[in-house]
Length: 476
Image (cartoon, rainbow, N blue to C red; front, side, top):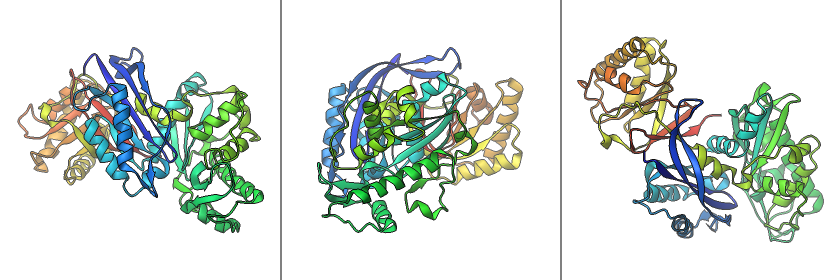
């Protein structure tokens, strides 16, 4: 990779969208010893804008005009600028729009496969919001449990972590835009599917065109806050719980890590930004200033009986842009310099399923099962290998086992297999696994990675001996 490269982060949320761009360099972390992208300076920060909609679908033409304008202002020229990483996410209710996939495809056409571009990946959103907002705080208080709520227009993404490490994620359909109003009034303009179910369960008769009575508004807010309370307290808000009324997107089951007196709650997203601004002494905007429940949710959170003390004492960075900040700084990893890449033409590779995790102690049946699953993927696949000691004997022994299975499976010569290592022995393992090039296998091995519990991996083009690696489809 070049000495410096460009990172681009795009976030299309239920209510607002934004972009960040930065200049970064690739360097080896003096503490971990791993290669990483380090942001040198932010080069462009877009204003927050309302996500363009055409009725109930994304206005693709308007959204792409927005993207092109952002890229121009950031000095990013598609096909010319060296984009080393970052990401694009469609979050909240935007990810559920029927033409969301069209926007993902258009972004990839402009920026290539160096970026994650994905919709409907709430656990990744939760992880990124934690990283972009409170991970640094968490590392400064390594004995405390942080529970982070990224509250936007359509969803609340939850993440619990200790010492900067995310240990549980989840997502609830709790957000400002489930009830839309004529701005400045209580006249209902639209209700989401989840809001209609909630109104029915609470016996609220108000519908689009009606004013929402103050008492009914408080009942809705009470219900939202009670659901958030249950989740943060570690209660089982899961797929089998009928009381969620369709408000569960991904289970959040933090267990013991989310309980106890040392828990700290932090916020981001549009609602979180309102809360922290008010805690600093700013006036909250007026009634339904944004045509939704955002101000009302912020007002209730400001006086939360147990969390409100944190709004003054423990303030994270990132504000309403935690997800896009996380994308910019944390979505892309950098491989070690000891990669096995027999031909540069093998990259980039996009959205390969990660089908298994192996360890050196995995028996031959487990290795055969993992590679057998990988072989059945017509686009190729990835396999994690954890804890392989970077010694000649260990690498040689595991490489011979891989080679034997690849031979027994008659691995197709045109089907890529990516081995993801957390240790520094990629090149040596690749040589052993291909019997020093005698096996005609499109085998790529990237090393020195942290290996999250993700479902897909994408690899960008090799640059100066290292490869940008992005994971998505994070599991809770």
